[in-house]
Amino acid sequence: MMKIDLNCDLGESFGAYKIGNDEEMMKYITSANIACGFHAGDPSIMRRTVRLALNHGVSIGAHPGLPDLYGFGRREISVTADEVYDLVVYQIGALQAFVTSEGGKMNHVKPHGALYNMCAVNQDLAESVAKAVYHVNPDLILFGLNNSTLIYEGEKVGLKTANEVFADRTYQSDGTLTPRSHPQALIESDEASINQVLQMIFEKKVTSIDQVEVPLHADTICLHGDGQHAVKFAKKITETLTSKEVVLTAYK
Image (tube, rainbow, N blue to C red):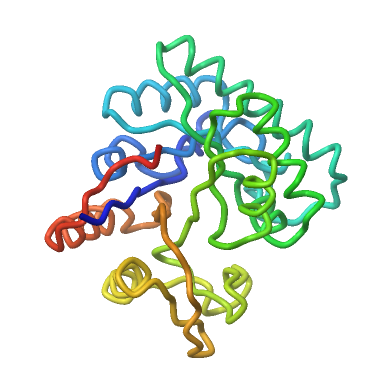
């Protein structure tokens, strides 16, 4: 029986500004990556999102990003490996405090946005993230882009890793995500997104924007929760996978 984890980046509101529909998304996912205050989120948002996840039986992960609220953590910033290590340790620790105070347990760490993409190809930064996670808690699972440098470095330090694929993002022929600045970066059609997910799960490959078939392995699928039709799509993909006898369960 095939099993797959559905994860979503949540807790990305800030103060009076609301982003996404966290409560509704919780109904359809198995893992939540909760922003830790650097690219989005604040202490109150973090606490509320942790509580929401626990109430819905959703696995909790830290979602550390670059210190860039203005750019939502999606702009590359020149940072050293030591700075990345400190940023990740700090953010995991902040979320861990809320998880512990609410009586929960943290399961994983998934870098956000530009940090995620930088670590997919930069060995020094990937190593820093992996070591930061391992030194805080070697039992945490490191989520990273399928077959990326981050996955390799996580395994090298002794972490369990989860190969992540994306439902609504297109791919380059080298297996990396198409940059958001590219006009074809996002898949707008629900049908096309679902077809891509089914291809990734059952055929273990994805078709790039250049029509190259790229092999991959999917442990967890990312659903973005900040799109206009995010909840509707999350419901549709869960129904589709369930109808094909795929078991939706957190990656542990």
